Each structure stands twice: as C-alpha cells, then as structure tokens.
Length: 419
Ligand code: SF4
Ligand code: SF4
Image (cartoon, rainbow, N blue to C red; front, side, top):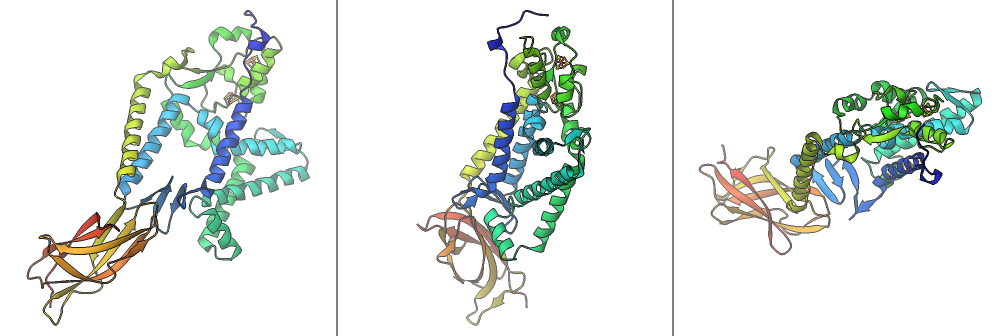
C-alpha cells in the first residue's frame, strides 16, 4: 500500500454538500413561484395572456424570437453543463433523484428496507410510506401548477370552489403519475427510461467530469464492497464508467470511510478527463466552442430583452364590420388595435392616426388615457374617418407615451368601400 497521509489531511465526505445542494435546489423550485418582482412572478407561464414572466420581464408569445432564444440558451446551457460535468446533474440536482432520495430516506426512517428498488418490511410500515409518497406527489404536482397559476390565486380558487375542472384534472393526473413513479419506478427511471442518460453518453468526452478509480489506485482496494452497497443504482464503480452511474458520489464517500480506518485517502475520485488531468482537460475545442455559443446566445437574449420597446401596437381592419361611406362623403373604416404595456409599471398611452404624408386623421373611440397595467395587452375598437378611398392607401397609427413621446407605430391599409 502507498504511504499514508496525515489523518488531518484525509479528504472529507461529499454527502453533506450534496444534501445541502439538494435542499437548496428543492426549496428554490418550491418557493420560486411565490416570489414576485414589480408585482410579477419571478418565473411563470401565464396561459390566459400567453406570456412568460421571467425575472420581472413579461415576454409575450408575439415576441416568439425571444421565446426561441430563451429555449435555445437553455438547451445549449444544459448541453454545456453535461459536457463539463457529465451526470452530476442527475446525482446532485435532478428532482427525480432528490425525490428518490427522499422516498428512500423516509422508508429507512420508518424501518423499512429498500432492496432492489423495493420496500421490504411490515405492511403497516409500507402503508405509511405509501401515504407519505401520495402527499409528497400532491405537493410536487401543486408546485408544478404554480408555474402556471400564481400560488395565492391557486389557493384562493380552491377555497372559493372556483378552480377550473381542467386544473383539477391536471393536478390529479400529475399526482397519480408522480405517486406511481415514487411507489413503483424510482431508480428505474434513471436506469432505464430517462433519455437524458442516453444523450449524456453521446456527450461525454475526454474532458468530462467522471467518477473513477485510477488504475494506479486499484491495488489499494480491500474488496470490502462498501462502494457497491452504498450505490443507489446498484452498480460496481470498480468496473469503470457505466451508463447507469448518476455521479452521486455515494461510492466515493463509502470508500473514503473505509480507507479512513487505514488512514488513507479513498480510491474513488471525481476527475475531469480520463487520466485524472484535472480542470485543464476542460480546455478542449468542443467545450470551448459550446461555451462561446452559449455566451453569444445569452448575450443576444439579454440585450434583446433589455432594449426592446416598452410598448407595442398592432392594428388590423375589422373582419366583422364593413367600411362605409358617411353622409358627409367621408369613409368610416373599423379597426381593432392591441396595445401591449411591456414595462413593469402601469402606463398611460394615447393613440393617433395619420396618412403617410403626415395628415392627421380622425379616430372615433377612446384614444386618450389608455390606462394599462404592467404587462397587459388590451384590445381597443376604433372607427377611422378618412377621405373616401378611390384606391387602397396606407395609413399609420402612432402610440404615444404620457409625454407624447412616440413608442410604437403600426401601418394599415384603407381600401375603397365595395357596394
Ligand atoms: S457508481 Fe458511485 S457515483 Fe455512480 S451511481 Fe453508484 S454510488 Fe453514485
Ligand atoms: S469501497 Fe473502496 S476499498 Fe471497498 S471495495 Fe469499493 S473501492 Fe474497494
């Protein structure tokens, strides 16, 4: 065996760090929908207005390119994390693993054994475990719904009996699915079904973080089997990198504990690169390219969100009311206008219309003091009075702010009245 280091120099255990991280990330997911910035959820998809609430910004579905950029940045960021840290996401941050750990922790707390992904013990203990899984599933399902309906609104509607039956159905389906996952599937999800594990094998390269026993260390192995017993995925890390490994580090801790008895460091290491190259293994073309792509997309997204106009205007000629000639010979054309307050505060707007030559046109309807709360998109109906059109011509609507500053414009075509 190799020379023993001083006992004080032996590395500590990872499990306290992992537990802390799991608690922190779980609480973050649980509490994020409860927090607001300028009266808007920190992160929520608002289905009625088809908008994404993102850290104080409201992105409407009309701003599809921002949605796409957000998805692209998220996807590339996730690939980058996978390329750098392998399945560390699975072992440390994935909600499925956190729920599995919680389910197995509770089973052991009430003195059940977990053998080959199954609970062993008396029936009443198993029943308590199932009840816990059901309650946990209901909480997780409600938590998912809160990313679509504000938690306060969700509970108010439950109390007043106004929660839509579609939401109830979603809540029950989710609860049942998560319960079946916790009761029957648990680790099988990571082993057999989760596509991320399969994608990950294609992404791992010579610079990815993996857990392994370096060849030079294998002679120190006492064959105690503690690493296998501790492994939630029931694999043997000594056989090398395996697709089922979720990089949780339980084997690493188990081995460190065993080797502390010999006042030696454990045999199992987290290492970037196959030959224990350390972080310098990250400086490879694949990782650097993906990092640059991620930075470029994130920068474009941030710039686009921060510099977009604070209001938008869309107009269209009404499809339901036909244009007509008035008694004074002028033409009345019916319009719908949608004004969107993209800012984080209530705003007052005014609307004007003019020909492309700058001649102001009369609009009937509410054009002044359009009072819109933050993020609101509202439809207004107007009648535009213009000279009778002999042939189609374009006009311009202008949305003005409180200081009469121009915020947005939209063009529309006036067509001759058909008899
Ligand atoms: S081999 Fe180690 S890191 Fe991989 S799943 Fe098993 S205990 Fe976790
Ligand atoms: S825990 Fe460590 S010493 Fe024991 S079998 Fe596993 S690798 Fe060998």
